[in-house]
Amino acid sequence: MSGVTIRTAVADDAAAVADIYNEGIEDRLATFETRSRSPEEVAGWLDARLPFLVAERHGEVVGWARVSPYSDRCVYEGVGEHGVYVARSARGAGVGRALLEALCEEAAGRGYYKLTSRVFTDNGPSRAVHLAAGFEEVGVQRRHGRLDGRWKDCVLVERLLGEALT
Image (cartoon, rainbow, N blue to C red):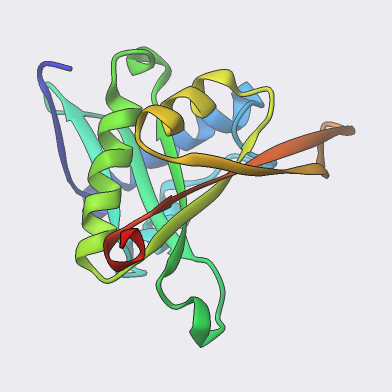
């Protein structure tokens, strides 16, 4: 993964993050979302003050990963839902794994004890990168939602962090 650096996302990254997310929406392999997002909408994600990282290659953002709240119940305060997206042009080069590993480190440093997400069962590359980054598949949510009128199953992935590891 030469030439790639991971850093905290900033407001100027909103357009690149939106472009990458929109590729994920178009590909129909990573999200139930079907409507493209604008840089202005994505900028709101950056205001949340939650872990949000980007991968940069030769000065260009080629991927991102972020944590969003899992629940508003206080018992789950240390659990974060995460997402990771890599530009088509950078897939298969280790960017996703580097982002996930860095996101876990950042989240643990902020007191999170678990990151979790749902991955479509037919998204082999995302499942593989999560496993390579230390996540475990802990269950399947059958017919979790419809995408373009078709039912999709999701694999639950999670990785324990910090004090939850002991």
